[in-house]
Length: 415
Image (cartoon, rainbow, N blue to C red; front, side):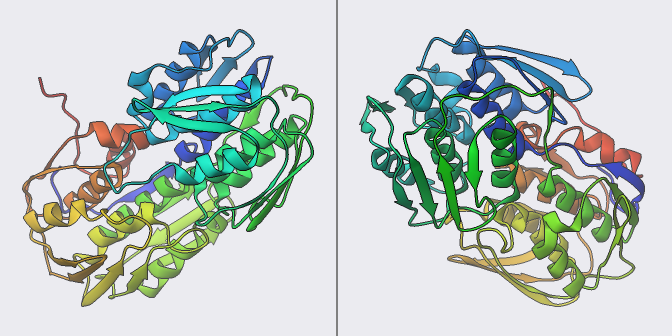
């Protein structure tokens, strides 16, 4: 990247990665083909497709962000090790397989190294539904004769645990109530999909979700994945940091209220329009205070990108990361570009500087990679971001979207 160019124009936001993965996992509950649209083609989506295929399902990427999944021949409840340990969200198949077969054997998951992120909450919920569980040689073993509805309280509103327990409860006998459930839009997307297919789920988007067990689900002609709010937020900050004027197509402010609140506080214009959102910025961002928390609070998945923005802010900002205990891997790399960021436990103090200087930096996780790209858009001279495999997990054609908005950016595959 060569920094210094303001971004202008329109950009289409891809379908949600975090919305696609649970819906893909949920297709394991079906005995007939499921057609999905607005699915981004990403490494994580491809990994989930490989997991479904390894179990006996058929996955076809049709182009135009459309995917056909036929789970009718799924006969195994043991996905192979390699794809599972590559991605945290792979553990979402556990709930669906347990509901379908009464058994599941799934490796402890992998993903970005941003904290311990244990699956204890998932497992305790499965136990409440009547499953027996054990962990042996790095694999979680689940088994039950019949899942039965239960009242489940989550000690933390985990998104993955909420999704897994919803899927496990769809065929459970009686009523399941999940209290202190996650409220993220991706939870609502999953339950909308399941309800259209015959499930009986109420309360998604609130802290209490009720699932009345049904005997089976039926396919529908098509289900459209919601837009990716984290990609949208990333693009919005890219426009703002370059003092640009960009329009994001087919995305609602409702998905991004906490992010927009902080952008507005920083002096960035965020204008809802008929078919999307316009973002304009003419000056250095003002300092803000951010504390990440579960939805509807400020999303941890936007913390790194906002830190990049505030690194060239006009004043001192404070960020507190309350979701993951090890999510400041990007701070040292931003400092290599000339930022002034100090970390003390869960708190980052960001002293804005008037310019950044291009340098070679490394993306150590998905959102850290996005933050470095955002910073590189304004850094003087050339910035090279290594480790783009992380970015490819969660952003569809990011370099093309930024280039079409006027950025001087290219992607190289190094041997």
